[in-house]
Every structure is written in structure tokens, then in C-alpha cells.
Image 1 (cartoon, rainbow, N blue to C red):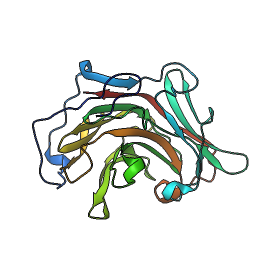
Image 2 (tube, rainbow, N blue to C red):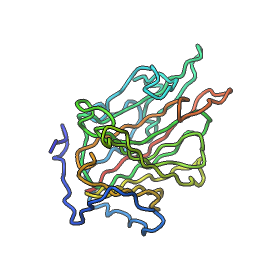
Image 3 (cartoon, rainbow, N blue to C red):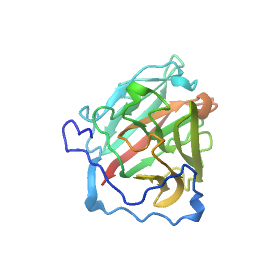
Image 4 (spheres, one colour):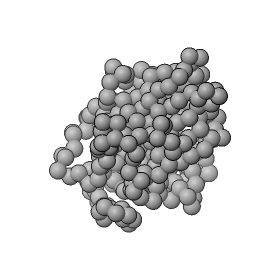
Amino acid sequence: MKTMKYILPFFTLMLITVFSCTSEVDPSTTEPEEPENTDGLFWADEFDGNGSINSNVWNFETGGGGWGNQEVQIYTNNLKNVYKEDGILKIKVIKESNGTYTSARITTQDKIDFKYGRVDIRAKLPRVAGTWPALWMLGDNFSTVGWPYCGEIDIMEQFTDKSSVDATCHWNNNGNTATYGQSTELPNPADFHIYSLVWEEGKITVLLDDVQFYVITTNSTMPFDANFFFIFNVAMGGTNGGTIASDFTTDVMEIDYVRVYE
């Protein structure tokens, strides 16, 4: 088991219930998860203060080139694109004077990773057409095995429909990319909401404001019983961002906190 590079030992939660099939479960047939006991807080970033994010926790991924999805943004480590303001992390997309779009993509790869538990992320999403915000995770072995073999857990993605959000898992299935996703209505899209992951051995559940809308049953043939790390970003355009508003100038994803519970 990997350890945090500077904070605490990583944990392994052993859960009693083991699921042996890979079939998806209809979220409407299951009861909503109970809110997690905050006494079990394992790690958090509250993004207190102003200025640069904590480089002991976060990495910057930079560059353009579409990132495999024909997106148009260029990711930077510039303070104008990613910064803290009054205790809120802001990932800001800007249309530059030369017509290009800059944004930010930050990760905890090789710094913060974990297996199982609950994640709560309080965030407010951008609203302008063309933005593609995501709060997601990749398997810690991404650098060695690549995608989709490492597995991907999307706690929140928002595509062209700004009145809904999606949760999705991706993995390898006999040489093919397997995908299972579900969407839900996003009430009051201009407000902050809490996006939660409940990750157990045998099951992954996602909630919006403590209401379950996504669940998938997993097993040992899938890559979801290993450490994962966080990725937060806002892409522009491409296969899922869609057509960018002609009058776009800037928009922002705001994150109040990310908390991981045992």
C-alpha cells in the first residue's frame, strides 16, 4: 500500500460484502447512502487562504493538443488559471486576446492516492456553453499500464447540458474499453453542490447532495480495488464540451473543499 508522501499512512478498508458479478445496478432500486461520519476524516484540502495551491499535494498538467478528445484549451500552471481566493479553489478558463483558450488541470498523482472510502467535493460549475468540467480519478498505475487498464472513476462530469451532471466508470474488458455512466438533474446549476463517491470492495456509488444516482457492481477482474488519485480540470469544446459560445470570454469552476473519509 502506498503512503502519503508527507501527511499520513494510506489506508485499506476491508469490507465484509463481496460482489462477484460485474452487472450494473439500477440506482432507483436502492436506498440512498447515509451521510458519512465526519469523525472518520482521513485527508482533506479546504483550499484556505489566497494565492497558489499547495504544491506538496497538487501537480500541474500543462499543454494543449486536444488530450485525446479534440478539446481546444491549453492547460497552464499560470496563477490566472488556477488559484485560491477567499478559501475557494478556482479553475478558470480564459479566451486570450489571440483567440486561444487557457485553463488548468491539476492532479494528486504520486502525492495523494487511496483505496476505498468516501469522498465529498463541494463545487460550483461553470455555466457557459462549451465548458467541460470534471472531478475524477485514475488508477495509480496509470503511468505504467495506461488507460483504460488503470481504471477511471468520474465523480462528476458535465457536458453540453448544463442542467445535469454525469458519473461514469471506465475500464478494460478483454481488450475493449468498457464504460458505464448515469446522469442526473442538477437543480439550481448556479449554486454549490456536494458531489460524493462511496467506494467499497465490490461497489462504487455516486451521490449528488447525498442523493444516490449512480451505482455499479465491481469484481476482481476490474481495476477498482487499487489506489486512485484525483484530477480536477475544465476542458473546452471537443467531443463532450460541444460548441463554445460565440461570445465566450471566461468562466470558472469553484471548489470549496475535497474531503476523504475512511
